[in-house]
Image (tube, rainbow, N blue to C red; front, side, top):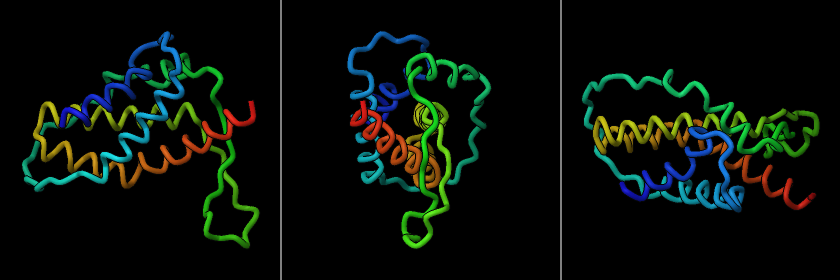
Length: 153
């Protein structure tokens, strides 16, 4: 659990603090995205079915603004809706790197809160759920965006 929380802390700091002066922050963010992705494969829990109090997302209202200040050169990018539909060359979409990072941070803050305030089982359950249905695609898109942005500059 300590590894999950320390990795979450390394990612969420970009949404909790404005104007961070961190050398190699893009490299560190990529490394921690890969690390959290890897930790997903090690999740093992027993669902406890306990009703816990709800998480209050409203206390983190500046995440997007802080991410934007830490990655001001990030913005919109193109993506393909269904990469397996090779014959369809028209279904493109627009992604937003700032929004992707903010979404990941918002979800990881809830994972951390559940781990620290509810139970290990509840935190791991929520991590698996939100990763599979939300975080995973954001990380894949962001790593692709970051890779292509760095190779073109």
